[in-house]
Length: 252
Image (cartoon, rainbow, N blue to C red; front, side, top):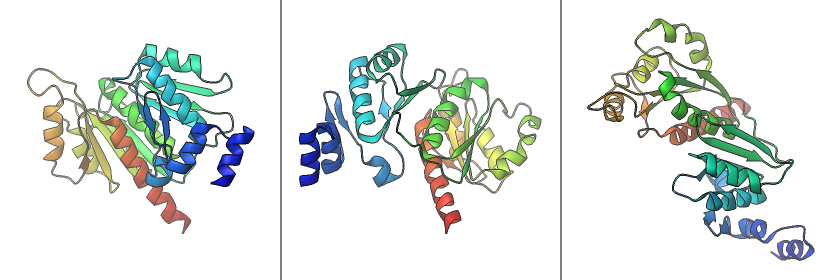
């Protein structure tokens, strides 16, 4: 503890970084940032922008950069992005996925993780790409190599069959689908890789809000795991944990 206090006194360590080392989190005006989550849980803490003001998101992003070297923001709109990019240091790297509504910011000295594992992220249609994109961002944040396979819904089964080699080479597969949510079941029936289904709130009329998709996936006659409607973050994080376990096994 004395070393941390000396570092703060000398200016080599900020109070937020010191708090993160001592308590595992950093306190901001917008809340507490869980700086130790990646060490404790294997996946980085993310900042959910939805429901927060732009200034609150910017405050937490700065705390994330200061304590972990990286800020991962989900469900960000244009106002959130503007506030964050205006506040972060000019030498930070900013990667925005506008469709997925994610923002990843890295400090110049941040070394991203790199693990020996592959995650395939599959979407049934272009309308499902935002949720699939969120899952892909999380899997990459863990350090996995991510392969995207888009617009391969069951209306034409030949589209997914064309990608069987890529699917079979993956260590875990995330499949996002709306409407009746059939694609994860089809994919899981073709490969021996773990499949995580993500129901998406796309479709028409009754059940078109993701209800039909999640019920179809839960009733799948092939074995797969299912997350909540539009929960790309959860699916990507779960895929990342599987990928980490696979990579760890390969190292042994």
